[in-house]
Length: 231
View 1: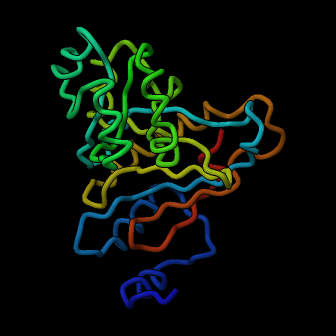
View 2 (view 1 turned 60 degrees about the vertical axis):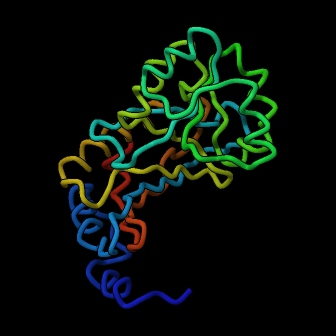
């Protein structure tokens, strides 16, 4: 893949093979985020887990202290008083059974997170084929299947993000935007790593975090010193 001049210049600004302390890595990634839009800064963690074993699956959620810098659209599946509660909490879309054909047949996916009350999971389950591959299925571990829709919506709007293993046992999560201060990015990073370290499966033998890289949307990845972030 041919890279542009900006990317090539960015690569020359640091040692690609070195492992950096978090503060230095954040500084480098911010400096190299030179696109015309506010780039997202992401953390990519290669784990020693084997996601094929249920007990080594990692999935959870954490509220970043400074949010993600992104406006998140929330869809809530509920009924009765919970519909009003979700609306009052600031959910962008609220509904029940009537939303199924809109999503299934019309391909409506104008939302980023789906929350559902437990009594609606039978209905939402019918959307598994559509929502599942996009990582949008509500899940109790991520706090998106709950009767407390007010808390769920508030947390998501405040910057709650979900982390999970992909098929190659890597976790990809946003840490914030390039426009954030280094302190804000560092706070978010520490909160995120605290949650991921806590999620280490008890059955895992060997190294949990094999490598970690910080990168902006268009910039090169900067490797982190793994011994300093894993505990």
